[in-house]
Image 1 (spheres, rainbow, N blue to C red):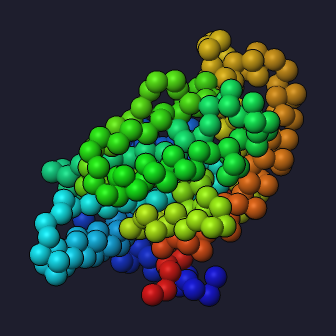
Image 2: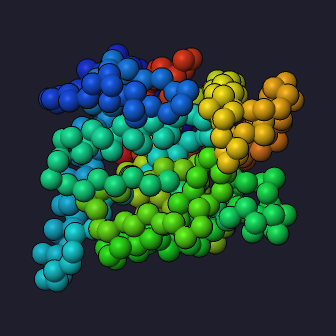
Length: 304
């Protein structure tokens, strides 16, 4: 990782600049994923400097657009500033994405700050099953990457009302005939394990789409522990809901369910992390490294 500058938490926190923090403990509780952890100290030490850094890239994005129009003497609609957030399953990407969205919206109430995940571009379960890919769910071939790339290019080009499929973790599947509409926002945050991945060896890096990218990192042993903790919590929440994907595990033998979860981690999530997700880490503009108890320990800033 010699292409990055490593900045410890204390030094990073000193880059805070000016910021009127509007978040409350209650706000953080709503934004935090099921078994993630974040407090106001994390916001001040890590996310306020991060937001200031993102703002620099956003200004550069707007300056490039203005320069292009001035040179070409052609007026074009402003393009959305797109932020990509990647990392392993259960590492805390969703918390990071929601927190950045909320903080940007508070700082710029007049702007439209949208957030979406790439989960909706997974093939529906019935298609995965027909392709023999149900046990490979989350691996690159389980996504409709052509549709995802087309979606991103349309958004990047300023197309109106672009539709993205919606995924539900309750039913563990894409929701039929349900879409999220992205209509030329000022900022679009895209979160997912495949955000920085290639479609295939002949394709371009997805990072060509993003104006700023973040990789949330942690030791795989910690991520495994967080994954299993989350699985237990999801079972507990599903025990009274027969429609929930986790219901059958919740009412069955807990030891068998946890053995299955460990097998899923080892054969699917860990393999996917090591073979396809982690190798894209070097594409990110910034890496946020989390230690025990989800505490952010240091930041890796890509050299320019």
